Length: 65
Image (cartoon, rainbow, N blue to C red; front, top):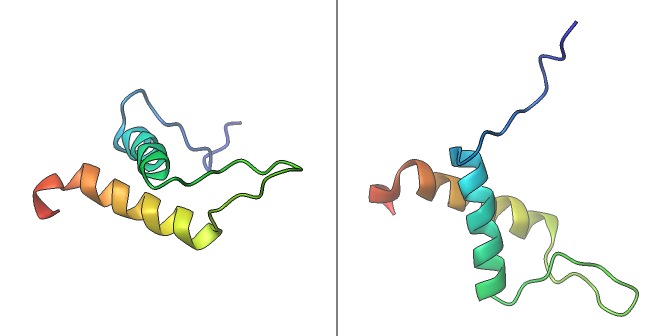
């Protein structure tokens, strides 16, 4: 039996491109997703979700940007 709730992101799918764009935006804004003993992450859940949603929207409808 297969798991119908699994998400399969294909190469260069809109979701993958948006995810890569999210990382580009994070780098450009000096954000870090890494949490280490010496440094805290400077992004929170809201920033990640809001920024990913904006990236996905941009990928799906770039002319509305």
